[in-house]
Image 1: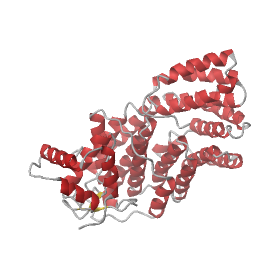
Image 2 (image 1 turned 30 degrees about the vertical axis):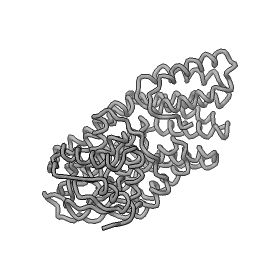
Image 3 (image 1 turned 90 degrees about the horizontal axis):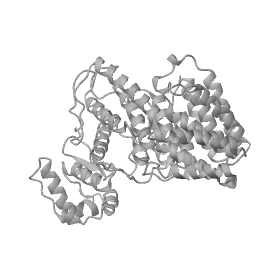
Image 4 (image 1 turned 180 degrees about the horizontal axis):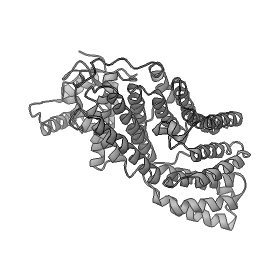
Length: 490
């Protein structure tokens, strides 16, 4: 049945440079290679998909997703193409432009399809350029009521048996039920991945995390007994956050945002609304880094309001530091000071480390001070008096950083260097900038290079100083070796 033009498909088709006849031939070839030699598509059928919204039968939507993913060098799912499976195998329907939130039974399917396509890009050495990020308001308006309500009760009784969803055919492990020991092992693997990320940045282990998440999606195609099912959703949420953070760390911004949204869905399906809120807070941090503080404030407002009762004080403290950073980017001195004061009070109200969720234990006292240093350093571009507070908190962060947090240590050095130049103290700024230069090549985080590039800009007023002039030359040479693939947000 015609539903009108498929604008999503039309937009992506326009980016490929293909003709309709060429796409038809590619569909036939790809389908034959994946076990469907009988499939025959022609130019007129491609035209109907685009111009009248005709829905192709399976496996055509998945074949198209593979072709567009390869052509554009970024993850393209059947949803991105304007298709959504519904009503069992072989049936699809158009998806509305407001695609969020997903129905509960679709979360595992969405994450396995998305990770499968992401893995395909990794295997073939393609780098995703991505499209524009969704605005914060678009996400918050779609997710507000959903996040504030409890998940629907499962449609099937606890116990073994599959959900009534169609398995994704590309890049997915065979779905199998698991037991408590397997989930224990998965939870331990998350801790290993977190430690790797904190030490060296997201570029080195991103593929491993995405692959593990893809496998967990297959496990979630079965309805396991509670609380095993909730624990699996928790693993999926933790891995999706890591995949998103690692993607952000290497400049794959739309991919990162999709993982954060997947993580929020997975956490809510597992009954952990604070974890869903933390996932959205990652999307807020991404927005600030990219120079979009208004979008960040929308997202952090949703995260703070959707955590539910009984949220751990440390989680609330972390959310406040991100809000303060966004306010700092807008030059709101009073709001920054007030919000960071509340963050300190909440952190002080925390109990022992064991009381905090495992996904919050990296937000320790060092990270609290590091976030405060970042907020005040950002504010100092509007209010230079904030640079002294940035230095105070940055030095405390460095003193308290445990071993194994190399990326955070480099970011501390960069914040302190920037604070020095903003405080009209180029000698101190030069000292910390050189410490950052000594270590920045040892990690794969593009964010550290972005921040160093911002600090280079701040050295310009002191370029007549021979010491700073030499520093600028060294910084310029180092920045020329920065990882490729992302422009500075400045």
